[in-house]
Image (tube, rainbow over all chains, first blue to last red; front, side):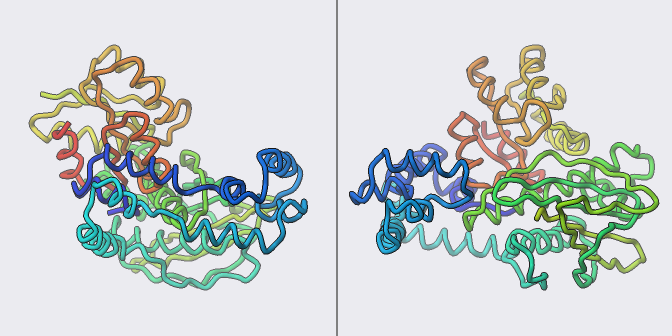
Length: 288
Length: 119
């Protein structure tokens, strides 16, 4: 019941062993050349050219390929040729497992079908987001997986509200937050009222009654719920090449006046309407 | 009885894992460490057969602790329990470093017990 990558799914299903998966990954690493390595293998650039481009990357925020063109080391046509060759020779993990003899082609097909079915609940739905967003895929995935995990983990019904840009996040019982860094810098915030905090605690602790639990435990369960959501977001966006890191979750007790969006960030609020009047809000603070 | 050490900065996850382990009948939780450094100390003092460890913790994280544990103790079996299990690079890194398995959060009790029993 989580976002997985195909190799992990195969190990969990007992279709391949850890050892054969690692063997296939090693084959993938030898076969799937990085852009610079591929350009070198095709005779377009030298190791010194890559070093020059890497040095230039320290002062220019550009991808290696674009930088090689910018430095006139590669022509745009050569860059496209290198990218096309990379795509044409890319070895997927399933193919690598067949090549190392860990799976037959037929077994690979049936495992892929089972994997698609297992991961179908995590395929993103369209969510309306503002046009200025520089990280729409991350934000869409974060919102979508929040909705899906509220349903699956908490087992509660809700109605998602319309996304709004805000300068202040409203006061609530507590806010649990986590920071995404790497290819994007975004702070994820989930604010919950007292009743929802207990609902989350029941689901995370798998207990029917949490009335005697300490505030520390109740807050910890909300942080853990946010940790589960954010970990699954990182896994989901990594499937399309976005690399993110997360830090451990934190609890924030906002002042009565609300939590202001920090300078250099823009704030998006997604109200989550829960049937019995409890309040939940998802906030995303996006660094500009 | 296999002895299991739980390593997680989250009190609620540690409690949940402890309950699953102790209710299994053939596994027993011998302690709870809150980060990688504590895990290394408690591996020495409690001598567990298995360590169930979170990847993303403040202080020494799970993968750093795993690197040390596999050098310091050739017999202990480490299973990573993490919300980052679905990240291919993290999953692969954990296996390469010597983890026996990676369990993704949210987890099911039955899945956790089955994996621990199989070690």
